[in-house]
Length: 314
Image (tube, rainbow, N blue to C red; front, side, top):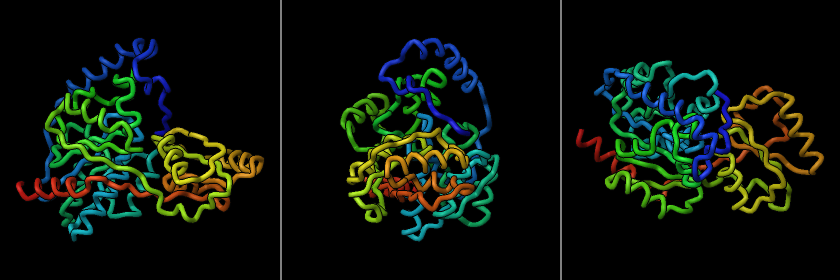
């Protein structure tokens, strides 16, 4: 699904548009709460769900990849689970680059398949709002810049469920530029004093391939374009222009032609994300480079210790 969120979602306070949409938002939340399903669980495999309540740009796929890497280093056999959505082949291909991925229209079927192939851990990319599932471990991801936006649920705001739903979770992950963390911690602990908080930031792995004396045009169609641009600016690249497309955007030949023309006019080189580069299969990519980034978890030992501790007690 290609989606570009309304700007008013990230205002610090709701505006007139938010209040006009609030009755619809409340109605949607009532319908969601009325859904009653039996809880699914496969005891042959441990499940780690990495999701969000803020829609898009919270770094859940990156965290899935990092957890898989950490477990594999400890010789623990883990895999990825993702519900099959036709418009998200970029995330699917990205996960496949870093491990075994099980795809299915139903997460339960993918988890069962992983268990049959003797995987010890299944890392589910998205699925906190799948109330039919009973996960062993749940992460709620946020970008520390956007946090909860205007604090309202869809379509009045950017939240899939109320911020008070944090009470139901034991683990929260904040990623971004590591600013304003102290204030966010206070807000989070007011809602859930017992929750574990982890912090992460993105680091470009191939920044040395880019000349700091060159000029660059940056484009992306990801959930948090600003975080990506800020990251590479902080590493000294001279960005003259950045272009934001909707999340999971499927680029056309015309889109790339326009970007190429703009770069020639400005005498710029072109940069995008690894995730976007995957989506450029139908266009000429010779003039386009991508930044390969890595998510660094500041308190990584605490995170993995909690996962393994829970595994031992179950």
